[in-house]
Image (cartoon, rainbow, N blue to C red; front, top):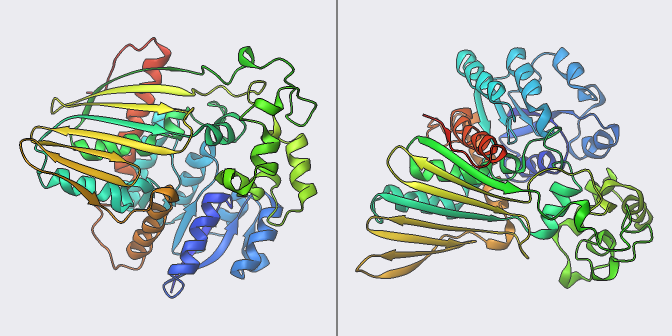
Length: 418
């Protein structure tokens, strides 16, 4: 039986813990927890029978105990990833699963890459999209040569207006200085996919984008700091927090309506708890009168050594959350929308490919398969790392994302990566 510790008991960390318990209970067990919130420890520890002496309120306390388990999952906020992962490697952990992005500073994630290599640490980053049937099938078709050599990739990440408001206007990723730029926080998944499909070094990046809409200049007449603070524009505002989190009927419910723990910090909530959180907390603030500063739209153009090009578009204003991908090769093309995939061979037949992915689940399928791969590596059942998103792969996507931000802030001037 392998043992796993977890630092960071937010949505992602507890989801991964749940998958281990549900699907791998005969192979691995959660044995220690660390979170800066006592409420989170009190809520989660009993579910996994974690004793008090294996519950830690700070990472300093956690690491002072030495290596507590065979593996470690780090799922804290972005800005803390570097320091915690560095401490984990120095403490002696050999198997680490780290939530993306690794860091918004190039020198930091390059240092972690070098430390992992020097210490023989398997440092896996949660680029979960790679693990889904859908994107695995796209890679298989490309590698099999069915569409020839890639000429171009056009990939769009439609974040969803409610999701963008939740995470990047009201939520933890609204400030690039305490988190990371939205193109890194939200789209390093997508850049990782593009680089994976291309299998060629990226040589040049250019980007344009802005925070166009979620700013005070666009606040409607009568708007107030909090949606439930007397706002006169609530009725016709799609971002009304009271509607999104409390009053919308089931058929209009977005996934954020079910994230009560995110709103209050508690596992069990009454209606009064939710109302209080929306009246006075971050998730009840007007999306136009907030302190957010990350882009709500951005386009990244990439040139690769093999002569191919790629364009990534990040859009924070779509009605639903979905990704689109159009890959053009010398012999054919692949057109992907959510979980649907169409293969067109030039001068030949077209066919729809069923990948077994479920479109409405977001990347939950990839999350499950990521944990499956992590446990198999931990137990020695899976020894091949070429298909695993280790820190080596992450450096590529992060370099591209930060080059895109450098270009954007300088008027779209190309940035060389060669």
